[in-house]
Image (cartoon, rainbow, N blue to C red; front, side, top):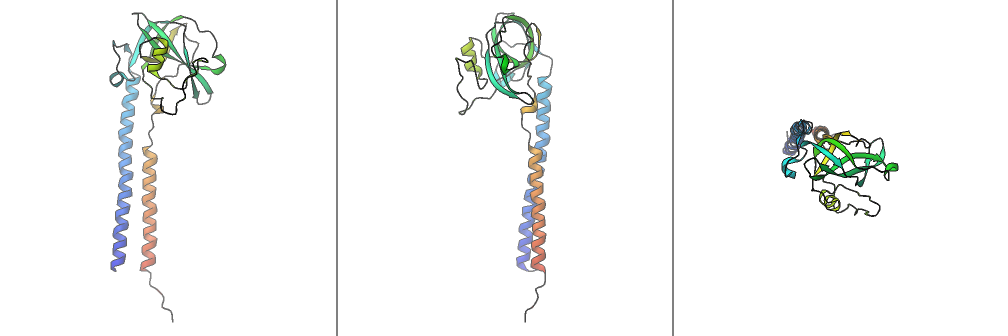
Length: 228
């Protein structure tokens, strides 16, 4: 084996090991992410507890809670899209709890044609999850206040507009008269887990690299024909 061929094989082997290692690392990340999502799913669907005195984003995000009280009749409309349905509005409504706290409840969705329907005050028992959605960035349009159309669930701003605590419960179940919306509960389907696709990509690149190496080595090591 000549020096040139040895260098090519060594470099190619190092490249193959690197690409394969990245694929293995992504598989390890996949197992880790599945574990995290499983823990989140279990936490989201656990038995609900009473609303904490001072909910904190880092400590109580996704916490299952149960509240009883009355929807005041006010609401904000957040333009959204649901797979299989198209455009809808999410209804964010003030909720007066039995212990005299005023919070917000994401009641779920309504068709765009029902935006201006009257949903007056009504008593309800709400089971859901505390949430602080990350939906606002520099590209989010400002809400159209006069038309009552919002483009993201901005908890602090909505609370200021509605005069509530900056606390949002995303309803999973509602009883009482407040059943004129379709709850859109929190789950893990919206949390990306693309590690399997990444792993397949790295393994495929490793195989392509190996195939190219074999072809190159074969060409270099093939005896050359003499020309007379």
